[in-house]
Image (cartoon, rainbow, N blue to C red; front, side):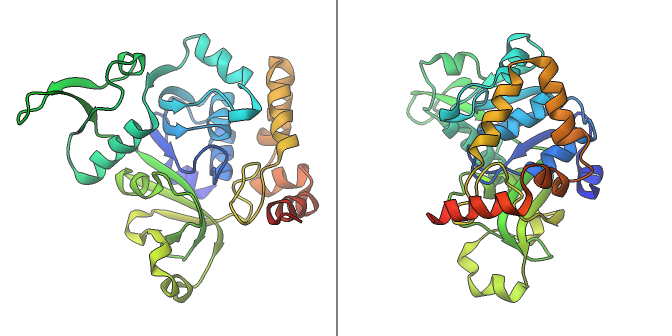
Length: 287
């Protein structure tokens, strides 16, 4: 609650970490919807349930995306599709690689990144990239503008109180999101002693000087998954998709799962609590 109140403001441009259903920062996104933040921009590569949450709450007015209106193999999200088809959200399209390089340009402190990605495609036509001529070879390239989010929101496996963060498994662009963003909110499965972080320094992908807030949120990616810790809750994700087909029913669904929940722990309890979370942990372990 405190992190969102201090660091997420109406009109901000945000970027979320993770990829697909892996390590999504669900708790922060629920609080963003619950406090009815408005006119947010959203950037991301494969944005699935995290985008679904924000669009359902009417928080997003513009986005830069590689993939957004679906839950991968689970199907397209009807509520997101309605929002996009209505024209209420401005869209710029990019490839996943292009979004990574836009963040990389911001980290490097340069205004754009020259690439060949997307050339000759409709993705380029619906992007904000510009065609340029290489001053050395005379060949055509695309200039991808640097991407500076106002807020980066990332869920990690472990962090210390200072914000030194470690991630097990897939990382994608999270380190660059943390470095490119003006403010960074970290949620973590657990807060550990700095001595534990120092035992495996190679796993520390986000250093403390990039981080503004650290919040301990066990199972903070639910209903997404955390590699090695817990699997995604597929029945619950199916329930989201089913409810989203009917706007009136979806309003009730959102009220029960987000608006009437005082915190993320209540949301977890309403979806089976520790019993269900234990099942997802055993499923991830293959038991």
